Amino acid sequence: MRIPEEKIEDIRRSSDIVDILSPYVRLKKRGKNYIGLCPFHKEKTPSFTVSAEKQMYHCFGCSKGGNVFTFIMEVEKVSFVEAVRSLAARAGIELPDDSQFSSEQKTESDQLLAACRFAGAVFYENLVKSDEGKYALEYFHKRGFTDETIRTFGLGYSLNSWDAFILRAKQEGFRTEDLIKAGLARQREDGSPYDYFRGRAMFPIFSTVGRVIGFGARKMRDDDPVAGKYINSPETPIYNKSRVLFGLSHAKEAIRHEESVLMVEGYADLISLYQAGIQNVVASSGTALTEEQLTLIGHYTHNLTLIYDGDSAGSNATLRGIDLALAQDFDINIVELPEEEDPDSFVQKNGGNAFKELMKNAVSFIEFKTKKYLDAGVLATPAGKTNALRSIVQSIARINDELKRNFFIKDVSDKFQIYESVLFRELEHALSQEKKDSRRSFETERSAERREQEIVLPAKSVPLVILPEEKDILKIFLDGNFEVIQFVLSHIGIDQITDTHVRAILQHVLDMADESGSFDVNRLMAEMQDPEMKGLISDAMVSKYELSRGWLDMEKEIDEPNPWKIARDSIIAIQKKNVLKEMEQNERSLKEIMQQRGDTMPYMQRHEELKKVQRELNSPEYLKVRTQ
Image (cartoon, rainbow, N blue to C red; front, side, top):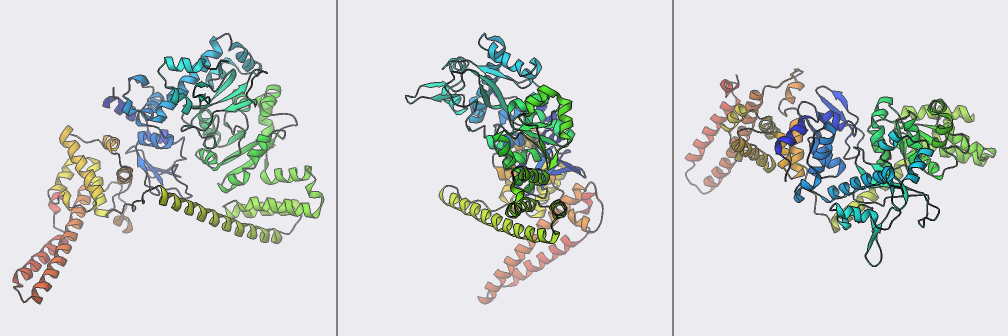
């Protein structure tokens, strides 16, 4: 079965686009709209616009746009069905289960997400209902996790069996190949499948919107043949560890509220802090910070505090991402834990309030680096001091804000008793090197892109450049005022629109109106398959009328442009171009007839007729009666 149109419309009306997009984009109010940095491409100046009135978004940088459904589909890389399901769950609207949806509505991602969702439920059931799971439940309780916390994070247990999960999944209709693709099963050399997670405490890994996309699994038995205390899901089409932060789906509201985020290493570290009331926390899961992870955090805050556990190799890896974070305009502080303590053990021994007090001692990255160099004895020699200072200045060079760089240089000058002028020369050298490295990296990426395009990809289409008057006609049609649309069609035909994309959309609007007696831009967006067409629709919906921008140049404040006036101006602009084009053609024909010594009178008469039409078009009285 397909999802009923009225159900989709209920979900859309219950899903405010500003609320839905805010977890992904830091939106700022600007006039009637909201703006922010685009989540689909790298940019430093916001070009991503959200219209609360139209319930649409559009990026003027990469031309991606749409409504709440297309946004979730694009950012989460899921199908329309999964996007509808996600928004329905958020809105508290019930939908039929997965098995009732038609197969053509499902994508590979849907199948894998469904498998992971099922696995999460099975592992939780194993934990709280099976005899074997009691050992893992006791382990969680000993770590101080309450039953409520266990439910909140969906903790579970995988049975110590080679095929218990696979057999259970098959009974529910899941295909073995999907379990393998989702990282829940593996294949032996003979092709037979087996459970990937066996006899381990399970930590589900959630996407930003709270869908299970993978798992972390902790060793429970001494005789476990798999090496490593923790194993994680392998990379899959729905799980890429460099683009995921454990706990973000739980922490995002607290991060926004606190306007800051804490970064810890492990699953247990995060869960203990969260349970203790420190909820603006995410975990790197022992990996070095990546640009993608920082971009995720940047949607909520640019104040980042790293929790440093000196005994942890993972924390050291996280700290190697300091320069990367500085380059993305983060303000970074570091909290150093006492020796032989990690966030989990510290909170279990001392409580959440003690941890909050510890956070008050957070230091800047400069103070932290200096202390590390001092503890290592690096600052004991002139050569060591030189290397340490150079490293610190190179970190400062990653900061984009020149004023902020200058304050940090002054701080280093005071701390090391060295002239600022010397440090600024070193900074200039570091900045110069940064530019060279960036240019070299950019050229390498562009070269790789070109090679990829030559080998695999078709040539990219030229970006759409729409005539202002045609874009305004498109906006008039999408606004759905059929009186104005009829006025337009009474003076120009759709075939007079030069842009094929605009022409196709206008025809689609008319077809929908003829079919149902009304028009809905969200239905149009759902039916459009071409990304360029979707981008064009969203652009028109969130943009001001093109011709009305001239009024702003005349310093006239117009909140609501008159659609009749816009329609009239657009009609006249199109008719003027058509007349000019015909005049040019007539002049070419006249020259040819004169060279052939033929009868020029018809062409001379046509020229005068066209001149008269031009004068009419330039008259302020032309079409005036229809705009009042």
